[in-house]
Image (cartoon, rainbow, N blue to C red):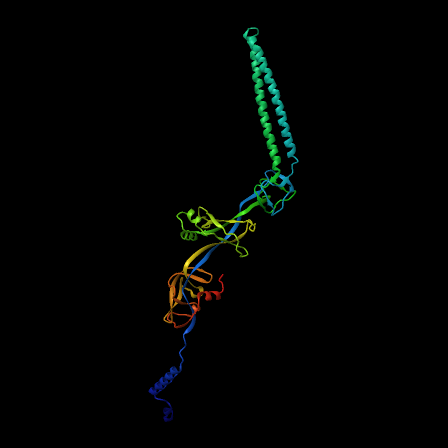
Length: 400
């Protein structure tokens, strides 16, 4: 027992021993240097951002080409994609029964005209009879009965002349109708433009009640691009445009750009010309129409793309996108204050090209952490590596 007791340190001596060891360990620790982070100064610059909306493109005038009468196509005189002028013959329909009908109607005019001449002769003869008998009655040579009979014959002759004139007018109307029907067998271009797909070829039976048109023509000398905004976007959009009325605001809108399906920019800029008068209750959106010139015929009816509406911020405070982070719906960045970082809430007006446009929360010239904000905490000491906003932006990958 004495041997065991001699090898156990008294309790106070044990705690003193551990305290000495811990003290020596802390003296040997080397303090960590502050974290090095890229920093920038908040600067001002003029920035243009774009609001983008999907769009569909149509010619300023699009017409379906249909037959006005039922008939079989006998000739197709044009091809798809061809430029045609108004009035050009596109198709012909069979006229086997139409021609004889027109000829018969024309013969009816001739017969009606002959009847008119015969009726006129009868009227003249009846009039002469009346004029001959009138003096004889006045002198009492003959009775009045003969004169009255002659007058009745004149009245009847005039009635027959009126009927002949009416028959002539009807014959002319019949002929015009038959001739128009013959003309309807020639299908002409209703407008000038580009011919679309031809849905019916030679031998096909077509008519005015067909659900599918024979073809269509689009006037693409100028084009309309349509896009929509929801109600909130629309109200925000108008609130930022100068003008009292909607008409004034539309007049003050900047020219817009068209991004084509291959992401290239259409060389001609467009003008927003009108806004529909009401919000669509089914979609909750309102439609805009942009007019684009099409001098080289690059665009066609049915093209798709995106409308880009520019918005300029003059002398705006800008920071790299990488300097911002979000927390609980708010946007923050880290200011550099006395070699430490401080989380600071900011209001962001817009984001574009890897930049954030700041409304308030910082001031021009203040230093902020430009990168690595996910590793920082308020109060953390940092070693600042001053650089520029442009150099930070150039190293960032685009966000899609």
